[in-house]
Image (cartoon, rainbow, N blue to C red; front, side, top):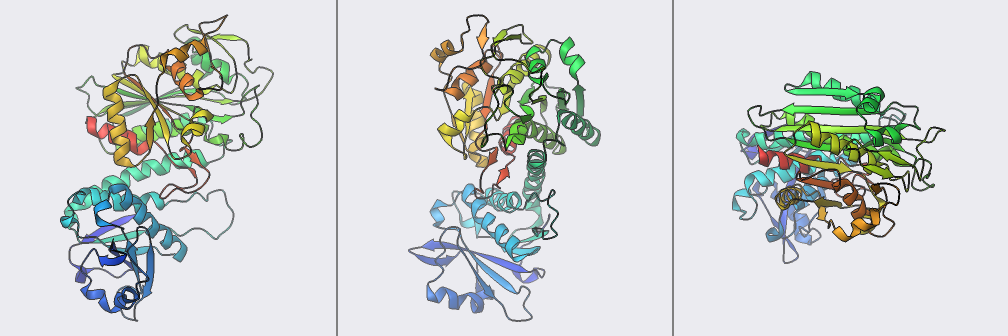
Length: 495
């Protein structure tokens, strides 16, 4: 998308729509910008009291022939004192969606008088507006044959700032591209987005950006390195598994190293513990953690962040065949921990355990963060809007929660309740891969904790917000790209 700026309203270029912001005050609309040039258009509507500036509400009026814009949209920002970056995202998401319905590609946004706001800075205001537009300006229609496609915005002119502020918007654009990339990976067919595809995608990305290196290993390497849990899960699939390492060295002089481990189950049947109808149809999304990890590292490289960050992706299908791994059997992890299989549909924690153990021993992480669509239990607890966070380090936890607060990606910290470790005990092995229905998200996190040693570690269970059943504000239905913006925000603060 092309963003441009002008500080002078009279010098704006022609477009298809101009958007004017309003506050709500005592159930009446109050202009959030100077309206002199538009009084003749909006005064009759405001006089009726039909538009009050209520948050997220819009009204459309039409100009006379010869005006720079044939349409003028009044946008309600709500009560001024309640304004936040997240509310700006959601308000301007309404604008983007309205433009899609009208088929508009070129618009002008008159910015609110930001300098007058005390609790939202100029940069924060720009970020909220830009992200609201960008994150909503997405659709996945690649698999449809209809020629009736959603029209997306191509040009946005911002009135009220100088071009020096475009750096803030450019950053938002780069991050949005990373989110689109993650969304596309999740939304495409599982027959196409295989472990092999993810490996090739990582290798291709490494060739396009500086200081980015990809290593992709197949079944023979997985067997020789004794990643026994990943190998076990992959046995029933015709598709070859892959172990992908995508590293960005943006600060070679530093030993600080963040490793993001992303669950890459490209399709999950549940294995021999087959998922039922109603649960299996969306399982192409079970690699959303891998998509977030790849997008985060690639975007960090594109932004030339001064950090060292690596994505580690254990990737496989969890399929059914005569070779499928079996409930009741025991398999050994990379760190030699033996695991009894209580349920083959608890496969994500198995491949993550191998990846975490491998990372700990070989990649010298300062911290590890895993991202996974891990449990239905977390969706029962928190719903579709929110991810669960588990963490063994208070500093890391605070940093990630602060990042999620700034990005609007909702995260709730849940406890690593030590007494529940008893639920993972096995009569015949070191651990069992399930702990029963009660506290299922917690026992899954406790299972992973057994493979991280003393390294600071955080686990995002994104089963709810990674792939949603309906739109939520600027988040689309289906693949959301959840986690990319929070992880990038976190990395920016480290830089």
